[in-house]
Length: 485
Ligand code: UDX
Ligand code: ADP
Image (cartoon, rainbow, N blue to C red):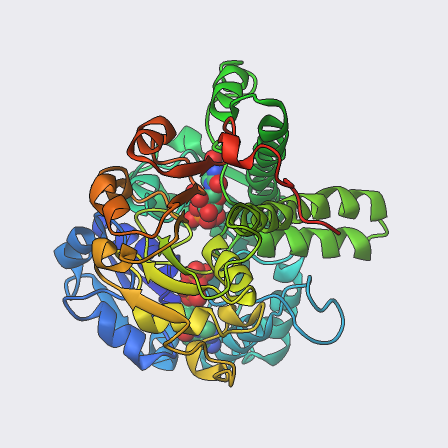
């Protein structure tokens, strides 16, 4: 029986390995992690991540051919194929700070593999890493391993998106496997291809050299994020001219060369990948002397930051230039719907912007806990991507007076001056906005950062409504659109 081990039981490692186990009953899959609480959660009825359809997949094969364990070393020693899916934070200090990937966790995983491996292993890069990481990992493995033990490194980046992970894994657009162009390298590629071929049509399994596979992942995320920044840049122009960004996106997306996906204007993209991967790409370009290319991609992140700043500015300027002491209901905190993940969620920057102006926030998200929200509002930039026990708690914790977290949107709306919609949860479309309006201070504002509500219906109730990239309410027409610099 082929044995697979995956180091890192996170958003990528957990669902991906569950799918391999589910589709390949003849393979034993063990997911290991240094975090004991995380492993305990994977073994419990309440999985550590919320992902539609994941519970069913895990339950159908857990303890049959899918196992979760914190006994990292013994399972590594025992496996033929080892996936590495650990954190790759952005460096906060030293060379490349604020851009380059910090490979500390990767390096320690590689050293552990070298220490405990007694037989040949295929080591698969699953977490997104800078181009040429495989080369560094190869060096660690080959220089610190026992004599006679051979390693083959493959790059097999994961393209699943959160919220749709199970569908994406079941029916991927493509599976990408990069390996060395040597006979041993190609043998390893074929072995991994054999695993995916159990359920993925062969023509969707692409094999390339190692560097192409590593770069393709960064390139895909950069280009997806670029589309969002492009439409978000257009949203600012729509507001200035009276065009409607949804109509523009629809018309543009009808061009089959462009296509309709990923053209939803928003308060900004979030998630663990886009910003981190682009900054990483920028750094790699700079290291290769490609300043113009680096500046081109950096602009995608800058437009994203601008979009968030613009949103806060809309809120503050609409509410008589101050939100000090005013209660604002924040609907949604996750970085997109159908996930409880808050990594790099735009809601953090919006909340911090409003708190900076002394607003009182009342936050509701159907999947994000109070602990998580409080942690997010106090964690320094880039620190989120370290295992939790390594992140120091901040002394600037937001007081309960400034931030309350609630499980009831109606209760939270009572006495609020404004509502900011940060996540496109379906339930926000169907709230009883009349009931909410009745309990709010007047004038009552809605700032829709995801274009989920119908502005005309809300205006009929009496709300003053701002929807990203849509024709402006008369109230806002003459107010400054962009932050004054
Ligand atoms: C992304 C990539 O899509 C995936 O292939 C890769 O493996 C990991 O990174 P993910 O971050 O999970 O996946 O979610 P995604 O659906 O890409 O959304 C990212 C962010 O962009 C979210 O904040 C989302 O709300 C935002 N977004 C997406 C928009 O603002 N507009 C859009 O049109 C699409
Ligand atoms: P992703 O979204 O890429 O899956 P996560 O942060 O959700 O990232 O998961 C990464 C996981 O890797 C965390 O659960 C962390 O505890 C784990 N991890 C980091 N370093 C190691 C290591 N050396 N050995 C085992 N697990 C590790």
